[in-house]
Length: 209
Image 1 (cartoon, rainbow, N blue to C red):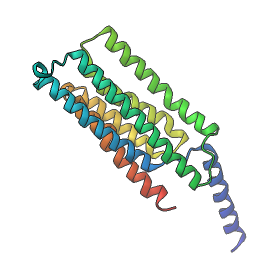
Image 2 (image 1 turned 30 degrees about the vertical axis):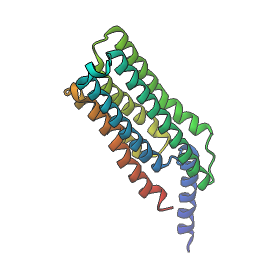
Image 3 (image 1 turned 90 degrees about the vertical axis):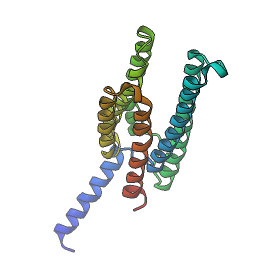
């Protein structure tokens, strides 16, 4: 090996070290798959709740308030299960690679992810409080703000996540023209896209290692 090759190898090693120190690379692709499957289960349960309300309302005595409460419970349950599963799988990946789970990069990732998510959550809450008949805008708003959050956080983790963000935004914009089908778009965005993204990340970064 000549000096030029040694210098190139040294530069590649330095580049890998810098990339590892500035990006959160312990993010597990399996956590995306788990979140997607959880979202699909949640969408199925929500679909059943809506059908009961529309078709058997007089039999079971369900009110609109009951439906809203049940949907909120399902949504909160899906969020908690997806977060716990994602956290455990990512911790597992971090230990496997012998990398710190919590450091400055992780903080930067979470801050950049949280800014659009919190803004979107407050926007949706204000929308529902001020304009009670705008439930159809919840699904597209969630998808759009979530996509913005992924793009904003992508500079601190794998850049592939940026393309997932683009897909979520496009899906949310399309959903604006099909308001009555928000639950299906929600299932595609948070379910199917997450599963596809998680599988891509797993085979691209995890299985190879």
